[in-house]
Picture 1: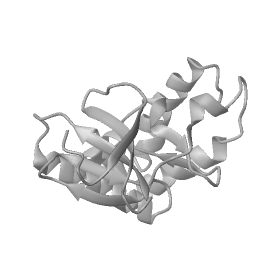
Picture 2: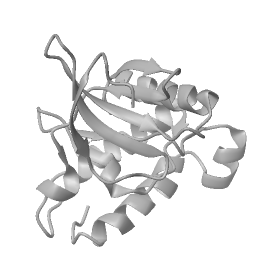
Picture 3: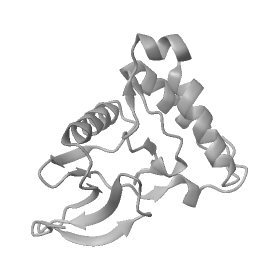
Picture 4: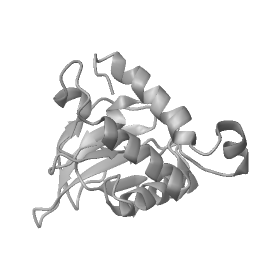
Amino acid sequence: MDNENFKVIQQLGQDGAQGIVYLVEFPNGLRSAMKQFKKNKSIAKIKVEADFQRRAAAAGISPEVMHVDTDNKRIFMEPMRARIVDVLNSGTKRFSSDLRHIMNTLDEIGILHNDGNVLNLMLNDQEELRILDFGLAKKIDTKVLKKWKNHPNIEVTLHMLKKGLRKYNILI
């Protein structure tokens, strides 16, 4: 990994199917989460993923994309404070309305997140819920709407996330 412009502080989470996320620091002290994709990930798919995340960030439901490095297959983004599964207690419903807001916002901006991995739900420094990882996301088109009606993220993504959260004894 070429890290001449930043220092790797630590790996965040486990190795994922598409790559690894690190906390990195630049010489000016700025910290970023860096998603390092595997070598076989297509640049076109990285660009699509970054575009979906930028749109979600502009809507206030995802971390800001700071930079996309297509040469080294990386996305640099605003770092998050904690994973929701590490913060919430069993039986809590604290973020239920926030999660529903995220799903509705994704529907409004035309993105089907399509990933039920609860580790993609994180909190920023202001304790606001954010959704990450748009690697499985799709544009909501007529085919998606025909299959999942007007709220595909409620029907698909939220359903998968609730199932995953139950494994951590978190009810939302």
